[in-house]
Length: 206
Image 1: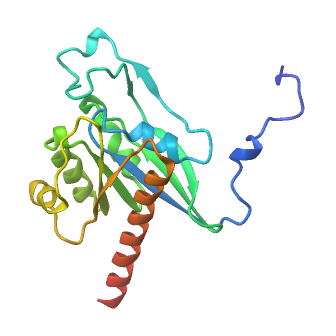
Image 2 (image 1 turned 45 degrees about the horizontal axis):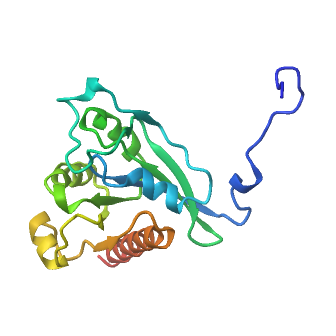
Image 3 (image 1 turned 180 degrees about the horizontal axis):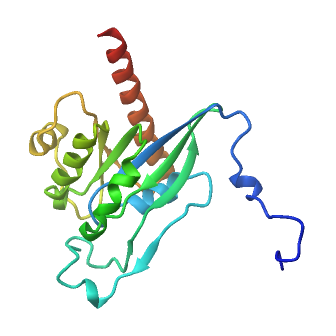
């Protein structure tokens, strides 16, 4: 269709329009190292067609990009992923997935701007990557929960052991998830919202 000579500007698809009952929108970032499932999570839980910025990985990334544990992965996010989910008729979450490769981490500061909270996705095969991720959130004062994506070949650990390994205080929620499943991804977001609410109540009482 030629829109150049048309008086009608195409709008969003019906299914992509913001519900008319929506009264509040919250920005949430999904962060983590390369290949932990950020793009998959945004895609599985979004009620609109997600925006992705994945590009094919090339030989230029050899020796630069760390794909340990994700050797079969052929594409990587170079800017962000974007999706949306309605938690209630009145509350909408805008989801921003960050790029995982370290050479794109300079984009994170812009994506963190205005975020109310974050989900840190973790792969137990590469826990060490999570320290830099959580450190950046702490520097920006962005509260977060930790979601352990249960890859089939990844070792499983009790929550207490993970908390110790990640050096996290007791109040930060840690939970298992399967980001391929919408219900599991939604549970993670609901856990984050309950955590943020508890922080708000605690702040109001102090």
